Structure formats: structure tokens, C-alpha cells
Amino acid sequence: MEMLRVEVFVMSIILMALAFVAPSINAQILPPAPSPTSDGTAVDQGIACVLMLLALLLTYIIH
Image (cartoon, rainbow, N blue to C red; front, side, top):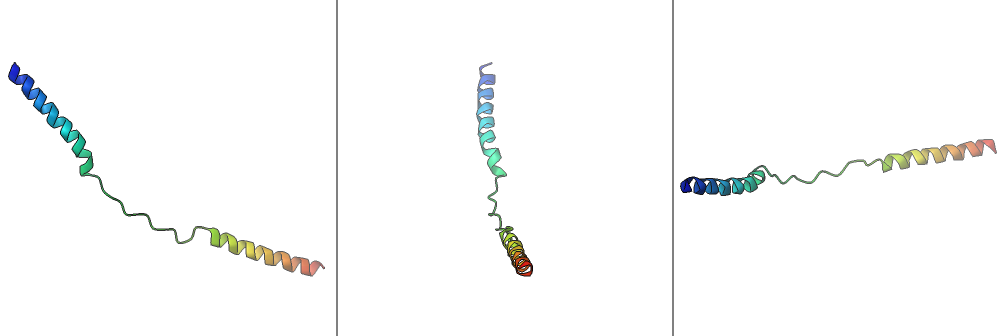
């Protein structure tokens, strides 16, 4: 009976050690994500510029 307790204790220690080690086996360091080529601000500024030119032409035509 005493041998069974020792075996259970040793197996539980091994199991706990594997429980802490096993998740790190699949751990991978991912490379950083590439920066976006266009975050949309350039497109927004282009549209704003076209609208400003359109407003300028419209006020020139009206006056």
C-alpha cells in the first residue's frame, strides 16, 4: 500500500511538471505584422482636396 502512495506521488509530480512544460512546446514567436501600405488618410486627403477645388470652382462660377 505504501508503494502505491509513492507511485501516485511520483506520477503526480511528473504530471504537474509536464502540465507546465507542455504548453511551451507549441509556443512560437510570431514576427511583427507588416505596416499597412495605405491607412486611408492619403485617400481622405485626396478626396478633401478635390472637394475643395470643386468648391473653389463653384464659387468662381457663381460670382
